[in-house]
Amino acid sequence: MSEHGVVIIGAGQAAAQAVLSLRTEGYEGPIRMIGDEPQPPYQRPPLSKKFLAGEIGFDRVELKPAEFYASAGCELLLSTRVAAIERPKKLVLTGDGREIAYDKLIIATGSRVREINVPGFDLEGVHYLRSVGDVHDIQSHFKPGAKLVVVGGGYIGLEVAAVAKKNGIEVTVLETADRVMARVVDPIVSTFYERIHRAEGVVIRTGVTVDGFEGEGGRVTRVVSGEGESFPCDFVVVGIGIIPNTELAAAAGITVENGIVVDECGRTSDPDIYAAGDCSNHPNGIYGRRLRLESVHNAIEQGKAVAATLTGKEKPYNQVPWFWSDQYDLKLQIAGLSTGYTQAVVRGDPEHGRSFAVFYLKDGVLVAVDAVNRAPEFMMAKLLIAKHAKLDPTRLADETINMKEVANA
Image (cartoon, rainbow, N blue to C red; front, side, top):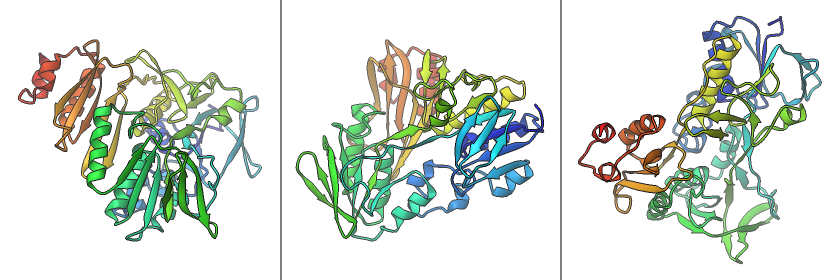
């Protein structure tokens, strides 16, 4: 590389990992990281959990203190928007008119919230949760007895509901699908979480569409459903998914298809440009197809893979995806992808207990697990999924047989 070095667009988990791994792998050239938020890279998952609850401060969610980037020789350009990538000249153009040259470019632009486009969407009190600033805005409504309507019964919506309920807020969750977390878990797990939330006093309404928000004095006071119902509220949190930030790449002529298309080392269709994290779409050998994943694990491992490739030490990324969600005293850990499973095997009692696992088999081969307060099952499943292990469903369901014995059968 010449004197321009590596430029990273984005300042999230993948970007921070790329800086750390570049230096660990021995890269000595310049590094510049461009982020549109005022803070250095921080973890997003705690925002809807302990950070929202006020149990931890920003020092517990930032990935590295600002001094780390200075000591690592990484120039941080924060509160800076990238307007375009000019590939022929190998330049990044910022919104304030700067031109930043690169030898190698890493796109780690992450994702943004999917916004709801209904009347009243711009009323005061309608919130999304994606950034530290969003959390502070939501926390301003945390007063005992306040009424919250959560639009969307996915991870974010239910995590917000759990935190709000613990803070004495009246919570109603509206979900369009016929069950919560329908996009990511089996009906067994959905039913369990609906039971838990209702027992905690949260109102869960499924099969409900949102037609609009209404208010007084510019502030939201009710949510109106497509079915003709009205739900009074003091504030709203919308959590209906995220969208990968691929526009810069697409405008620059880089191949984009449900994310920025990369190989197992993070290379895009431009040999000098790489991508990592939520915005990328990569091949996964375990499942034999391309994936775009929204997870911390994916961002970290892709950041490592890109850094290794840039330093001439290819370490292809090919791992079992995993995710987690914290709600009340429950830790849901998901390993693998259950899409296309042919059999669900339950270990434990989801109808009455607070600890169980659901294993997903495809023609007898383990492809995924949803584990609630079951760390051993989660850890063992990760290993077995990678091995394409074929398991006996009867033994898998039998809690008198420990997981190691099940795996070794």
